[in-house]
Image (tube, rainbow, N blue to C red; front, side):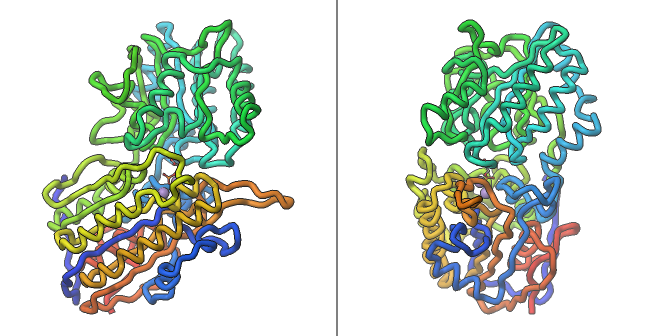
Amino acid sequence: MSQLSLRPLAGYKSFPGPVVTVIMDGVGMGPKDESDGVHMAYTPVLDTLLQGDLVCSLKAHGKAVGLPSDDDMGNSEVGHNALGAGRIFAQGAKLVNEALHSGNLFQGAAWKEVLKRTENGGTLHFIGMISDGNVHSHVEQLNILLERCVNDQIQKVRVHGLLDGRDVAPKSALKYFVPLEEKLKAMSQDGRDYCMASGGGRMNVTMDRYEADWAIVEKGWQAHVLGVGRGFASACDAIQTYYDEDPEMTDQYMDSFVVERNGTAVGCIEDGDAVILFNFRGDRAIELSKAFDDQDFDGFDRKRRPEVFFAGIMQYDGDAMVPKHYLVEPPAIDRTLGEYLCSAGVTSYAISETQKFGHVTYFWNGNKSGYLDEKLEKYVEIESDRITFDLRPWMKASEITDRVIDTIREGKYKFIRLNYANGDMVGHTGVPASVRIAVETVDLMLGRVLPVLKKAKGIAVITADHGNADCMWTEKNGIKTAMVAHTKNPVPFIVKNFCSVNDFRVTNQTDVGLANVAATVLTLLGYAAPEGYNPSLLQIK
Ligand SMILES: O=C(O)[C@H](O)COP(=O)(O)O
Ligand SMILES: [Mn+2]
Ligand SMILES: [Mn+2]
């Protein structure tokens, strides 16, 4: 780590308690109607906090968090990156677009190795999510890659496609899979053989994160690599059959499938092949990358590990070098808040449950795993339930709160950050009764943390990384459709100062977003914003 230094803030006086930053994942500021799960929930604590004087709203989507356009909703990766880095970095979605459109992606060593493999008779496999959600992937990027395969005369291509239904409408898979299968068919001429090979719903197949449940990746490995899973004539046939068999089935939870011809899987991954994982976001791409890359591996029994050239469209973890090969340089997120605090000797404590643990550590620290300075930091993960969270909307919020309360009382850590997953994880299920309980749970938790923080004479910072619970459904012609994705709504930003030694006021800037939070935390801790950081939202009166 480079030596960074922070400049003390003039007129600031030290105070006894910690600064506690609470990220209410997926709790945005919605339209305040019946579709708004945050509005519909009973939230006396939050309501009172919002009446305070150190309150504003923050942009948490689009360009304010480094996404290509303001049509892009926010997400946890870009949200926590912005919170932890204090600046806006061009993110994966944008970087991959640029590399594809400029053609730079095809000039690098990884694409050249792909060409070498395919010239020697290997098949090129694409694995990734087929939607335009633009959170983990974008189908348009796959289309450009496929067109290049035709131009580069690659003979055999297989696509292993994961259904989304979480960043897009719950049952929208055919909207993406039908044209994709048609495209692959149209490309299959002049000796080319391109088709779908396997797939499944992202929450059941392949896209686990933070090692919450390796069995999900194992299911994907079986379908994509080994060709093991229920067989169908095409991906669309599989999807339609699963819909017909269970009208309640939504895309994200669909079982795996394998495309077969004459009873044989069309796209097992074999020695000599090349594999590109075209999801650009890291959290749900790391486990599959390790399954391909790692010699020593204990996630599950791979049965067979083919000798392939495996590349991510990006590198998902620069420090751990996962994966070893990649097509686009990830955003170079440097000089994060965590690094500055460590250089200044400030102690930090980060906690969440498994589903969001990497958000407050890996994403927060600019997509770096592990401690920045083990002597000054403590990271705590509470194991998440393995269940769809509409069935247990309180999740592990109480357990997180218990630990935070103990930590505040212990007085060892000056900066505490935590993420309550409820608003987001339950928001993604689209079950209104559960979403309300999720938001009410978060409110109850705030009601437990704040009195303890008051006694410790600390300061609370309460915000969110993007919206989700603030829109539970959309309505068209009187028909309601569950809205399971994130929203583009702003998020609340609240500072509750329980210690009177410093008096702060809101700076009243326009156009503020998540990237202004890091400098604000530094103000509360008594430091000026480092060069290039988006300005603090507060100043000392
Ligand atoms: O990965 C997911 O669960 C969704 O695509 C996005 O949710 P997150 O950005 O809140 O993690
Ligand atoms: Mn989130
Ligand atoms: Mn989410």
